[in-house]
Length: 354
Image 1 (cartoon, helix red, strand yellow):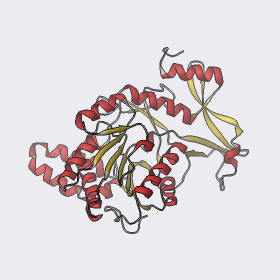
Image 2 (cartoon, rainbow, N blue to C red; image 1 turned 90 degrees about the vertical axis):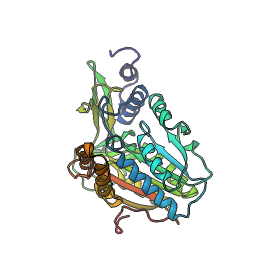
Image 3 (cartoon, rainbow, N blue to C red; image 1 turned 90 degrees about the horizontal axis):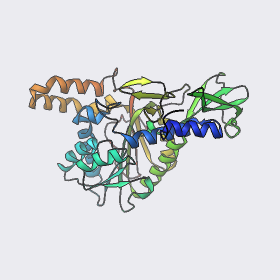
Image 4 (cartoon, helix red, strand yellow; image 1 turned 45 degrees about the vertical axis):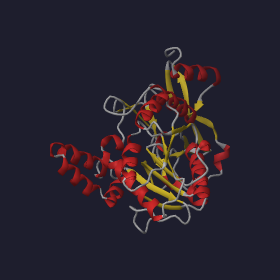
């Protein structure tokens, strides 16, 4: 048995007593424990996000939000909302930039990690923290930013068989967590068209992501504003497992050490966009992160920063490359916006997208 009291021990005991758990439950329990226990960001953590790579990322988001606010004729009671704001770095860079345009919204963070809340409070002592979407203010437009948030939400996986879709489970055997499939077809899923998909194909879905997007879209439809989602993912439905785990900046077995590694999966932007459209939001993108940042002026911002700090010019150019290059984050990471009716069309997206 794993160390007593650890999330691995809790899961092992649960499985031993009750049988295998759904992959979504395993992922949810693992990530909840993981984020509650540590700051996973930075060189000493397990991964680095775009805001930690360069201030340019948050600054351009600040410009993007300010532009929408200005073209909407500076509405009152506008709230800046960030989901899973990490250390608060993105918000710091974005809000500093927004201040230059006279745009100073209330700050709301949706965060459950005590460790990260402490770091966020050091940068944003005036912020308000929420454990869930339902607690967000209802008295004005919401400008919602979700950078690398949806990828950490639990997923379900199913394998296509001649008997229907078989759900993926996680078991415990001989001191190890192992992936399994439920031998009984998922009856509530069999009616879904598998349209000639070959046996053995893996389908992914994220009910947690869908439910969250429904909540966010409903609030923006009622109150006005926009949802900005930046994450790695795909624009069209596909097959195959995208589940992965990172520890110390290296891929590890997702079943090796629950609660000790960051479990993620690619985001289904096609599904999120369709949910937003059901609430009559205007969908823009998805676009390549690199193209989107370039459309907002990251090349010019890089040149200015390098000119002002020649001793850091190489580091600034390297950060620009990492954020925008197709062989780095520029293509894998997607950017999508969903805006309320009668709100301006956001910048950075080609006119034929959405």
